[in-house]
Image 1 (cartoon, rainbow, N blue to C red):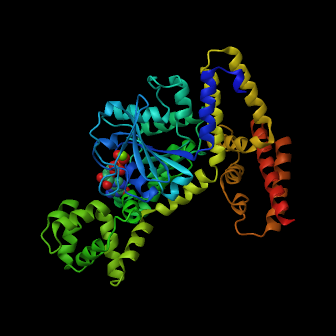
Image 2: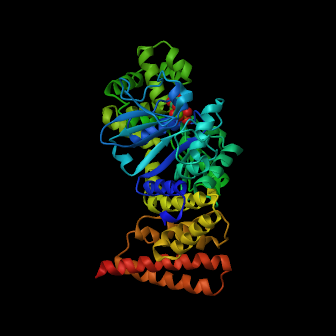
Image 3: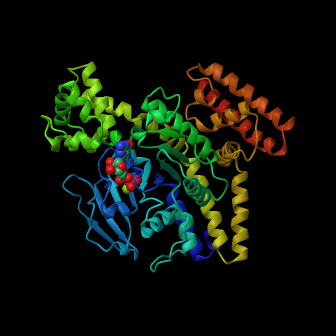
Length: 493
Ligand SMILES: Nc1nc2c(ncn2[C@@H]2O[C@H](COP(=O)(O)OP(=O)(O)O)[C@@H](O)[C@H]2O)c(=O)[nH]1
Ligand SMILES: [Mg+2]
């Protein structure tokens, strides 16, 4: 197809192809200070993204897999400059380079997580700093680039291919109206069609800071309160994200990046051994925790507070009370368990990793369409559109159509009875065949029979009783069951 389009469009197509064979790009987005960089560190398992303050928190950083750890500054003019890690192995908080000239940072790390996910840390929307917002918006594809010199693509096209393919949306207790807007514009930009839960997960971060008493029915428990709030937010963000998962990024980061040491465990043991009154006073507030007079040096306490905050400290002290001989390693695991990171990881697997090819293909399709659209040549536009139609009609495009069906149903664009909607989501989402069929752990024969039965059911539903829109969905679901059935049968021979 390339000779039939202009050099500029062809360049865009080459970029799209390159993206298809690269790991899925997941942007971590949300307001500033929502804990994005902290979560990035937890996910990568290394305290590498600067958190809190410093000019680098105002830059977009792409973390991707590399065989040698290194960081590069990429300038607007296309130039690059290697920069050293700081003494702790992180990206320095300040670079001593004019920020205006920097496009973004590229960090190459050997960490396994990055083999199939490229994680993009963003400065965040809703920041007072207009330049940070602009950088984030540009990355998310919600804003047109400035078309800097040295770029082969015009701004529209560059944006069409530059956007992340999936997003991890970080919110805190209060979801604001513009959070939803930002998410909507992200999905519109990445998929150029109705936003969906196919490529977006929201995290309710800083779950530890939620006042349980502010949530009725929490029973005074922080995690219960967080789960309830996450459920409410899921309703608000519904058509836009797959899920809202509560998480304590800070504890996840501390537990996963070697931030919890045996010296920390010792300090916690000493705190646990303090008399009841002193201990309770310390735990009343962050101020009291660091300033109240006690045997554990204030500097040590400040470090604990920074790494665990009061909730984490309380949690650790309770674990020590229950099991005075607990090892530092076990304490670290307790903290990790209480952070909710495992739930986030498993959702990343089932929502992003398992569907990476489909998500990338959908993004590629959207990019190609946008590239054609941006072309001034009417004939070229038509040829690209025709080619896409041919492509979509092929059996191999089934995964794409399934994702689309999923999106339509999840967003409510096509209404389905609730049980059927759930079935569509299940068939389209899960990575394991048993789970896809809603029969986890059952034998192959049972699964094979059931897949065939459901294939038949959806075929007849598509012909009888369904509205035209439902019928189109039903065709796709029928096909999904049929393919599962074929696959299971082939395994048995
Ligand atoms: N209590 C608490 N603090 C957190 C949590 N996650 C991040 N923080 C703190 O929030 C501040 C901002 O975090 P950062 O990751 O830099 O936010 P970003 O601007 O969204 O990247 C830092 O001081 C973090 O230590 C959390 O789960 N609980
Ligand atoms: Mg940050």
